[in-house]
Image (cartoon, rainbow, N blue to C red; front, side):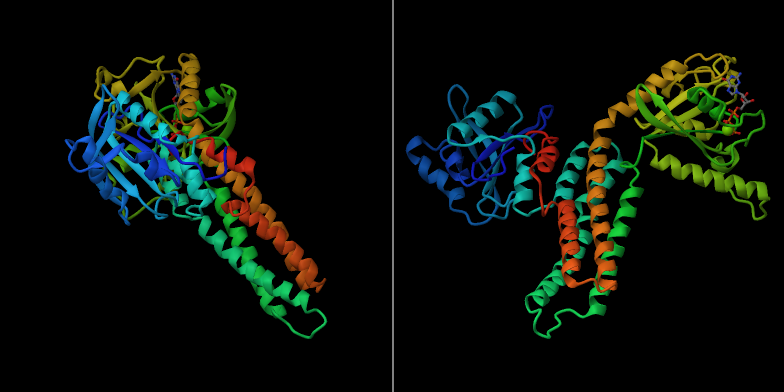
Length: 482
Ligand SMILES: Nc1nc2c(ncn2[C@@H]2O[C@H](COP(=O)(O)OP(=O)(O)OP(=O)(O)O)[C@@H](O)[C@H]2O)c(=O)[nH]1
Ligand SMILES: [Mg+2]
């Protein structure tokens, strides 16, 4: 990956599958030259001699705006109606002159346009190079660059929300704040060290202690936040859920290969949730067995004024279960087809998305009369039986497939989280060292040394202090044109 931003780069920025519009993105100091004579504003019928005039309007603009015009491709393609957004100065995403040509979504046209831009002096962009330029120009920090990737790759609303929060700087802001106070404390300490023979105190002892404790608190808080991050933390979670007695615990035990959860004919046997780590298709997965969702309470949502202790416990365990459900990478809906279908089951089956795997349990038993051809049955991925063992292997394969499909996205968020966690932990340790040194009056030199380590570590979280291999790792994961 080239870190310099002197070249003018070009790439197709529209997805290959989009037919409506093809977008060619260009960034760099020579954007104008690369577009001269290629994009002309005004009338498509302008003849060659008038090209300079027709062309001139966008070239002399001082503000970013949309232009209607024509892209002049070599024969046999000829003049193609096109639009262009042109950023003449540093107010673009990459903080360089930049442009986006919007063409009809036809691959030969878009490819020919790309070739023409290259012929005029641009080179093909590498993966993530536009975002890398935005990062190098200070437009975004590293966590935000990774969030751009997360937004592009997000498949579920939860993933999108995590990525958008990251993009909004939920980590970048507090890191920048902590760095700012540490830089100022360090500057004062260093000034004090320069004038060590004179009796000048640049930062009071109490003030230094307060700054250090506050920053330590902030860093510890950020670390806790990172650890709580659902996606980045540990193996993906698969939750078994459904009505009481639907066979969740039996299935959980069968997949674990051990009698972990209590199984009984009594509905409401599982009260709390139970977890186990298993290996499915070579990957570690966290399985969770939850309390059954009571058809009465989920069907009419009514709450009685007088609650028996049992009902209260049921409700609490169900709340616990639903929290786990929201955070799960995959939910396995257990439907007992030997019983009549409930309205709640039907609604769940209809809403099932890629994060929900609906299975018919107790397939060794005959299906309930009302179930034959029942609405929603099409959403059932397979039938399985914890008693006969039928369908269990297929269930494992399906779980692995569904988790595998979202694997890369989880990895991206997880790798940002892991990288940031390691740097934050390093900052926390250095801050603890600085605080101890300051409290025990071990000398300002020592405090300053620890502060420098903390600043460096915090800097790597946001990418202010960047190492080429980290950048390479992050930006290589992007697609071309981003
Ligand atoms: N025939 C048959 N019975 C099953 C199967 N799976 C579970 N059962 C029976 O169904 C009843 C309920 O099973 P559990 O696994 O405890 O169901 P659950 O969904 O965990 O129930 P709660 O914890 O109460 O919500 C028990 O009597 C099991 O023996 C199966 O595949 N075939
Ligand atoms: Mg159970």
